[in-house]
Structure formats: C-alpha cells, structure tokens
Amino acid sequence: MKIHIVAATDKGYEQHTAVMLASLFANNKSNQFIVHLLHSDKSAGIGKLTKFINRKKHGCELYEIKEASLSGFKISHHISLATYFRLLIPELIPATIGKILYLDSDMVVLSNIDELWCTDVQNHAAAGVKDHFDRYEQLGISHGYEYFNAGVMVWNLESIRKTDFTAEAIKYLHEKYDDILYWDQDIINYLLQGKVKKINKTWNVFPTDNLKEKKSARIVHYAGSVKPWNYPQDNSFDKYYFKYLMKTSWFLKCLTNRHYFISLFLK
Image (cartoon, rainbow, N blue to C red; front, side, top):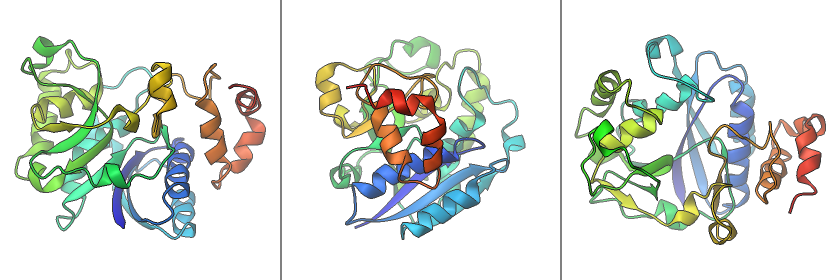
C-alpha cells in the first residue's frame, strides 16, 4: 500500500524525525511510504535525513520553508517555527495528492498503521484523537465541538483545499495572537471545527496518560517539553525512542546520551 506521510523538521530536529520514520518503517514493512518533508531553510542535517529515507527504499519529497516568511508567528516554551509548517500543507503538497497522514517528529510508531491510513474521511476534513479543551470563548470555537491533538492527523486535502485554509490560518493567528496557547494546533481546531472525525486514542498516546491507555498505545507521542533525549522519565516509553534511534544514521548518539543507559533500566 502506498501511503503519503507528511512530517516537519528544522535545525536540530532531524535526528528525532529520523527516529519517528525508523519506527514507522520497521513496523510497516509491507507498505511503501512517500515522505513529504517540510523543512526549514536553516536545517543542517536534511541531506543526511534524506539519504536515510532513500536507503530504507522509501520516497522522499522536500519542501524548503524560509523561516523569515513566518516572522511574527507566536512561539514559546519548547516550540519552534517549524510547528507552523503544518498550516502550509494544502498549498505545498501537490494537488494530485488528496489525502495525507501527518505525524509529529517527537513520536514513535509501534504498530502497523493500515487501519489509521484507511480511516474514512470522505465526509470530514480530517481525523484525529480528541484532546483536553476548555477554551471555547477564547478561541471562538463553538461549544459542542471537540478539540483534537494535531500530532497525528489524517488530512482530507481535497476537502481542505476548497477553502482558503492557509490564508485564513495566518489571519486567525494575528487576530487571536494573545489567546492562542497551543500554537498551530489551536488554529487548526478553529478552522476545522465540526469537521474532524474522532479516532481511537491508541493512535496518539502520551507518556502522562493512564496505564490502560499506555498499554494499548500504537503511537507514542512525547508531547510537551520533557523529551526522552534530554530528560529521563520513569515510564515505559523512553526505551522506544532509543530503540529506534539505533536504527537511524544517528545511532552513535545513543552512546553519548546518558539518558539512553538510564532508559535501559526503566520498565
């Protein structure tokens, strides 16, 4: 099965993007992936990442985004401008492609994703996992509509392209600058409110989720500022990051990261 994946990366995050892709490839050997890689013009390791994808015999399409074109966009905490690359997807991805699966780079895929990819979004703009939300008034989202985490989403590009998605996203960003808390995720939820299909939580599980959810995880999302490569956590998820890091061109980083050795002893 041919599957179109979209991922975003910038300087210093190429390694983590490779880990996500390595986990995807390892657990989906019967699929052929075309990786649409949105990358910053300041990315230093994009060539190394491209070679890694090609060596795994998957396709790779590059889309360079100049960070200067996103000046004035709201960033804070651990977030960089690369998070806003998602807002450009409908314009950057060729019009011949009507459906894509977006995956954040700070995650690992633990299972086959055929079921996720085959999610029927014909009558929706996208599909995603419900997230916690209580800021309806601040963001102008109607009560009754659910809020979704944007880290794992199946996008119906044919539907989204019928709107001025990117232009409307940028306009909303400037109008709601002070109210936006979760960057482009807030924007996507505002623009697609009522148009997103809810999928099973197993496709986007956080290390902070309850034990039952963690045991059923098919995709682990290291959401938030605490990442396995810079701060060890007492959970069962850190080991997966390093397991798949060993399968990338950055495998030697395991030997220089003390958190790797700590993760070996965490259950």
